[in-house]
Amino acid sequence: MFNKILIANRGEIALRVIRTCKEMGIKTVAVYSTADEDSLHVRFADEAVCIGPPPSPQSYLKMANIIAAAEITNADAIHPGYGFLSENAKFSKICEEHDIKFIGASAEMIEKMGDKATAKATMKAAGVPTIPGSEGILESYEEAAKIAKDMGYPVMLKATAGGGGKGMRAVWKEDDLQKSWESARQEAGAAFGNDGMYMEKLIEEPRHIEIQVVGDQFGKACHLSERDCSVQRRHQKLTEETPSPFMTKKLRKEMGEAAVKAAEYIKYEGAGTVEFLVDKHRNFYFMEMNTRIQVEHPITEQVIDFDLIREQILVAAGVPILGKNYEPKLHSIECRINAEDPYNDFRPSPGRITNLHTPGGHGIRLDTHVYSGYMIPPNYDSMIAKLITTAQTREEAINKMKRALDEFVIEGIKTTIPFHRKLMDHPDYVAGNYTTKFMEDFEMGDEPEDEE
Image 1 (cartoon, helix red, strand yellow):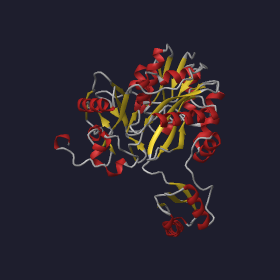
Image 2: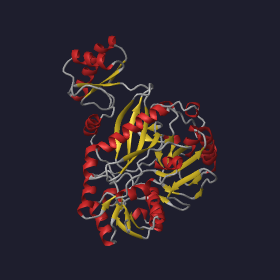
Image 3: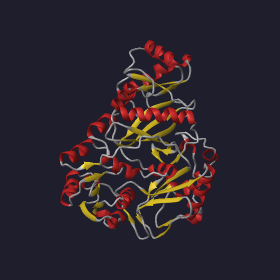
């Protein structure tokens, strides 16, 4: 087992890792930028090393400074958390070269799964369902028509040089294909100087459902059930839950088996997440793999009573996994509390917290690094807390979340607490009837006068 772990991260995830290390009797080293000098992860680690000024490229992304901090403190392992260097193949390789265990995926695994095209090809070879589509650029309309007929409608035409939705057309029936083909090519040619097109199956009413996996150093992997992350804004997750209200036993079995197959095919080591798009007919397709711990890992821990950070550390130390798959016994929801103004297009709201009252009670978990008087720096991601409720049923978990959000007071800055409170009353959310398009029609309304 490791004697000392350096946590190459900040905020709530750094504090989260420190807590598990302490419970395992492992010494910890915090690293921090000058903006984070007063953060709780610095206070609770056994040692702390300043690694640079506030900008991430000069501190949390500065590999040489982090390796130097590990060497001067004699840390024998580095936990990267999520974000920053957690999926950086070069950093994983540098750790290996310096005989420091990187608690995460190897450089080879990160490279294999980091590039979407390579990951899709790898998963195809592993026999994991991927979004059907043309192999490369379509040569002609006739080829497009044949592929669409073989795949079945609806399909999506996409410009190979696309961006901003230009050169994209959803085609729902055969009669519309030629017109869509011509207009998409014309638009793409005008916008990008390139009218090359490819085609994918259109995923109807997509949900973003991910499967948590853990793999050991002996080629074995298991899954720890799913998380539904469909409520998103600009591809940023806002809330997550497990089990998914859309899930069936049959679908969980099939998706779980596919995720384990994916992990074992690449001999994946550590905690990771296989992400899928699931259509309204419950067909699922591989989207990407995150080779790190996820922000939303606590809800999985809550429903199966399992410490994922502890498991990461054990696997990195060479301990084999139990090898059994897990099913959720309870229902858990996570709301990401960001320092943002939901009444003002979620504009960032850094600044000093002047007053803080946190919720408590049965089934409430709060992962945060902030306190009354804490200054939220403008340099990093705006997430300041994760509020997690766990109960016997989804309805109870929602009611618990409402109560917890009502208790949660953060003054001095704007936060997304009012957004989450409104979400918990939204009829479609309450019914479990939401897709990745949910936020497109969501309206906050006007800010109440007493909240201004």
